[in-house]
Image (cartoon, rainbow, N blue to C red; front, top):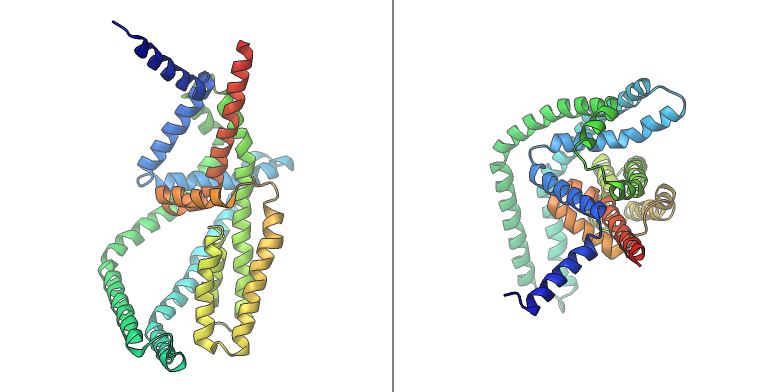
Amino acid sequence: MTTQTDFSNLTFIRDFFHRFLPNSQAIVLAVILIVGSLLIYALSGLLMPVFASVVLAYLLEGLVAKAERKKLPRLPAVYLVFSGFMAILGFMIFVLMPMVSGQAVQLVQNIPEIVKSAQTEIMNLPVMYPQFISESRIREIMFTVQRELLKYGQDVISSSASSVLGIATTIVYLFLVPFMVFFFLKDKKLILDWFIQFLPRDRHLTVRVWNEVDVQIGNYVRGKFVEVFILWFVSYIAYSTLGLNYAMLLAVLMGLSVVIPYVGATLVTFPVLAVAYIQWGVTSDQFMYVVIVYSVIQALDGVVLVPLLFSEAVNLHPVAIIVAIFFFGGLWGFWGVFFAIPLATLVKAVLTAWPRIEDKHMSSNL
């Protein structure tokens, strides 16, 4: 026999689903988001080249669309944009990466000298500030640091065997990814039509949410690539002019630091200042020049470059950005960190659209 409590529980459950899934469009959007997220999370390891190709094709599609608006047919526009993409990729592989890896090897080889120099400076601290720290405490800290460095070196040696497989996989990806990017651009309409046939017809809310975030995500990601390039180029010119060691390596780190908002700029400060300190010392004029140049570059990036490139970006609270970085970075690693803000934009667009559908549905019943 059904009791009144059972009816109230059923009513509560029905109202709950009715509130968050007010109509078929909301159900379709929820299913698409859940299934898409699960597929990407489960298959990211196997299909990472495909996902990377889709992302790159999405970025290049903006340039193809601009060329089409200039009355250039799509196929020549695809060939033109793809040729530029391959030229940049070739520069990164054959020019930039050898320079960065060479300077990284030099830095690793000079680590013993850097540690010895730092140890000498640190051992002077008990003499300069005996009231704050003792010599025995300094020796204990240095012993711990040396032990951790030795352990890290052993881990690097032990992982060198598996790195051969990683290099082979990377070489295969370098052939597959550009190949797929070209066909994603060339056959965009054909591929989209194939996917759309599996989606329900009642998908107006999904289309509306996607239209809301499409322009913003595209502008954000393309703007982020431009920001990375400008910061890398300006930093390399500045550091090379000053004669700073490992200028290319540090410039690449400067460029990549903007991928992680707030956190990246803080992390890249330490290697830049550490290299300048080891090279010239903290009291030298060159060290102060590096500090000034680094500060000016970061200030111009925050005050001029970011507002210029991301004037149409969605207004997200800094706490929301940090939470998105940790959450999506924990799920999908580097790509999760890179797309944390666009994904947070998508979440915000969905949450914003949901009450509108509920209000419209409720008002139609009045």
